[in-house]
Length: 328
Ligand SMILES: CC(C)(C)c1nc(N2CCN(c3ncccn3)CC2)c2cc(C(N)=O)c(N)nc2n1
Image (tube, rainbow, N blue to C red):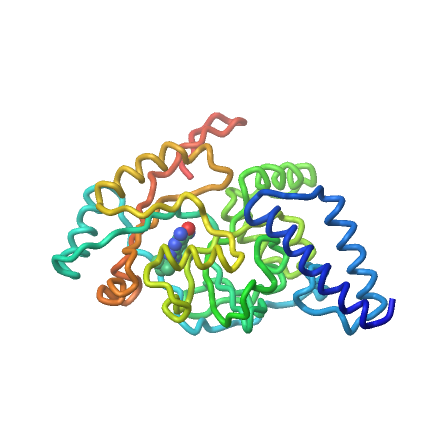
């Protein structure tokens, strides 16, 4: 095969492999068996060995980077990653709604309710559609560059469907099943088990060797798009739909609620479904949907006035071994 044919075939393989990856990891509807994916990935890897100049950073063969780091680079967030005010009961939610309606006046408004994924907040930067940097939230202003580890999360696209330069934010997490399997392996090795999936996700993303992170079966749900207005969204829910159209994984349980009563019903419904979910959540995040109303409401020093985190009461877990009730 000459280099022209190789270039052509590399592009075809990128497109096909990215499509299969999206089907399997983002929308959970694989159209081919893993063996087909592996066969094509192997073909791409062979062509890249023959023509190294055709190997690009966004190639599906580049998900597990080479270098083992000795430290993570510090990165400053262009826009601080804020924290969230908390609500612990219905009264707190009603108080939040009262503050919102008093502040934006007698006009219609709606909320978006999202499951609060119990993981680690991260920020992903794309330049001309290429994934160029991933960072932890850190203290909200400064985080750590964990790009190599985030590249191992297959639901994170290495190149967007459109050449956008944007920053998106989300929660990286470890599914419950992966957490149980990882702790079994650690137990067999005589290693300390992780206390919960959140710690396991944090510990995995803090691995200096991306090959270890690649084995931890991490995943991510994106929940925020930088300057959504710049790409035509007028509401938060439109922004989330835009994340979907760009190939990102967002959480499907989200719901637009017209009233705080609907929010309270959503919280009750999701609280009952919590144990059936394949990932851990620690509450519900309630956000004013209109972006212009978010701007009107603004921020306190630490968090947006247009969002609140309803926290579920700590789950009581009876440990199998000792029978002691632990609140987690
Ligand atoms: C964009 C805003 C600020 C409204 C926002 N902020 C969030 N968080 C901030 C506090 N964070 C935080 N983390 C550590 C220490 C303090 N705060 C952790 C992320 C959100 C977290 C989730 C989630 N977990 O599923 C979510 N669906 N939406 C969020 N939305």
